[in-house]
Image (cartoon, rainbow, N blue to C red):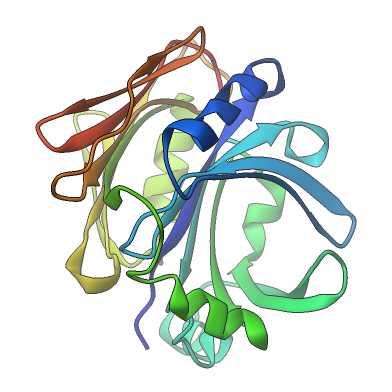
Length: 252
């Protein structure tokens, strides 16, 4: 069974979140929506890529007050028996799972995650197996998104020092990809579908309490461009065929 990066999120401070909705106008195919599942409701901005991976900028409020970084993995609609396979491959991890419903009704996906993440809302890694109609919908997104983004390339973040060791030794021990801890930097080369690797670079910063994203880089499709934008919380610009999101110092 192969798992790939399905999507990743960064939590956005509630006071800054509304500004990010402009990405829905700047980048075709970007959704700005509120979603409900069970007792949890959240608002997010969703730039997508043709590779199948999408980014979620999520409003930090309610139960997501401390949301920092999340990496979600799947087979992008082609996965089977995820929980059984993870339990066999990583028997030292205590896995928990449950079924997630979209808007409280339609089966959406089966989520599998290490149980010790329940006590650490700042950084999450989890696997998902799509259910019912959602499985086919997920497959169809690959290569068919109406977006100028071909793939996501990298993300640079700052973390409270206590998280760096946890991420290296525990939180990401099962993540599909390679991990290293070099000169205080936590580096993960994450596997993506069709060989589009995604690099996460984390640096320890004793001045922050929650993870803070600094920069996200995406590859543009040939001949495509995106209107540049600079606001109070972030800027978006293109350089050498890449689309770059820079976050201007706010904690997320």
